[in-house]
Length: 356
Image (tube, rainbow, N blue to C red; front, side, top):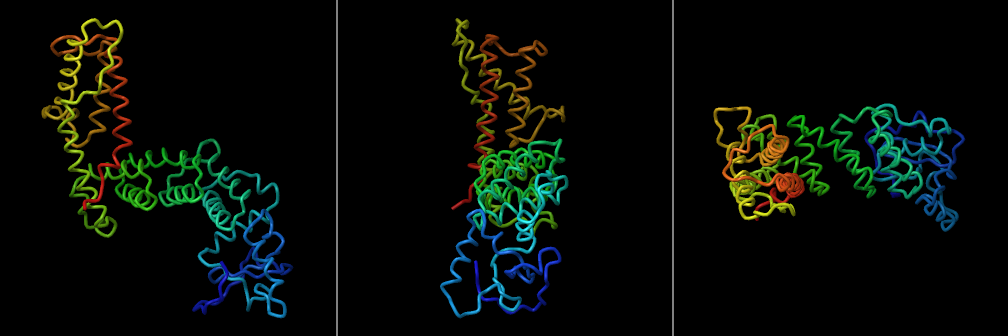
């Protein structure tokens, strides 16, 4: 945390807000100097409390932080992060209790959560994470984050601080963003998922990028943003999902028969035939472009199968297959198909593995 101040090619700048003449400790973050009150930094059981307590062990030597020429040097931090911490320590109650109203406010709380975590300001960290979570869960307080960089920072701080509630609030925001189909957003999601090992996000992002095809992967504008490892994962995923899709027509979701079903053998055969017919129609109906979908688009196939099953249950479509599926069993079949969607969605990451 503390280190001798390295030579800088840029002149040191006194922060306009938190270089307080009455302060008694000078702290340097990059090329910015802050002069603040030591007792404020020592609160909340922070790491600064322990750091300052060591000063009496070096009698007769110039103490770090006593002047601009001998500041306490914080490594690995950014001035805007330290300013966020100082804002939380110096702000008036009315400022502290006002919920964020802009995206820049959200960024300040992200900075605050990150630096409070690093220096063990436990209650400050908890408060910042709570505010971020409340904001993301309530559109009445703040419009949803639509900036990929901010969403990335929210995800990183949720993982850094091991805050499950914030993580759960951020996940659907990524899904909403990814389904808009912007390639750069998908690549950003792939990158953050790779970095933080976020399996649900990794699977969905790679899946959506896979569906765009090689022409998009090889777009000149993207060569610098798709890494070799990401391209290998995409190819691996295409191969693995192709195999799953090839087997899909013959692997209907397991049907649990209703107690009123007295011909389970025939009902089961009719269910498999119905499933095979639905899946085959999606792939082979070349005359209907609104119906035919990519062979590897397994999620869309399953969603469409669920839609067709709902229409059958509601009597909006004929069951144009040999035999009959008990209607109560068909309802169970729809539930099994819906469960299959979730199983596939959460297992997508396993398809996009790096080849040895």
